[in-house]
Length: 402
Image 1 (cartoon, one colour):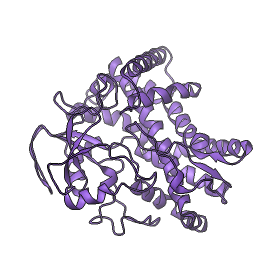
Image 2 (cartoon, one colour):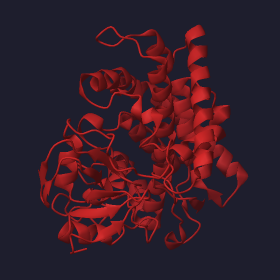
Image 3 (cartoon, helix red, strand yellow):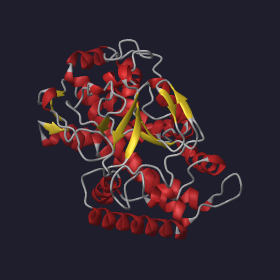
Image 4 (cartoon, one colour):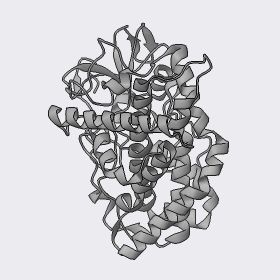
């Protein structure tokens, strides 16, 4: 990794489901601005140090896409980075901020407090069913996946009964190498048609959900969202609202149970739940692709000057393990505070739904500590299998017993 002219294939494959690839540390130390080859064959620049990642993510000048940006996958259409969905929403400036403000109204602290009892009740029901089905169980399939799906379906006013279709459509949007072009095209056409039909139905009979409010309301400039923007917003929230959180629930529990002293510490002091959630977010060694930024101007970072026209891949997973920011970064410290991790990004494009993701992770952990104090992994941590071929990182299953 010391040769700045070396081109590394990216994403870097995980060597372990919950341990970071050793390349991260080598890159941070020796080659913080690395040349990488994406699944599409296009080249980009990988940033691995905390300060560089935060600087580029927080710069409002830089957006996710541009006509001459490197393509992430070789999908001609579809793919969360180069889909029509990504391109139909405002990517920068005042229009982007107006769009964000209309969405973030649904993720305030007050709304999260109101949502908590319902999420807790649903988590309890899912744990009831998991116990009834018997052990060992797959915690991801039993709780990690259905809980966020139920939450986001409720928020968007879409039927939970369609969740299996949502999962497949989401996977094709997050495709790196798993699906062929024809599959992606067909799935995206179905997803767009589904969401367009849902928007039309909400126009006829608005409900109390987020999409109904976006359909009937206006932004600060008095403008209504176009149908195209509404469809893309609904699709984006559905994908982000269940895929990443479902995977993170599984990874969080795997991290806490891999060394059961962490679980015992939480049982002894449940007040640690909030900081424990933040620490597992920071320590996530399998976070997926990272965030892309297209640099429209020259930028000076610790590894030198990145020229305008560069496609930068920001590795939040590596940045979150930067020893210059996090003392004992390789260790899971459940009481770490402050914890300025970048798992939700930074700046004008940071994750809109992060308050909801945090709430779901905290509630999941609280319910499992209360209901299943004897919980443990049913396989060795080394035998956990990572998800492959998608832009999000996760575990295929999380086998547990109690």
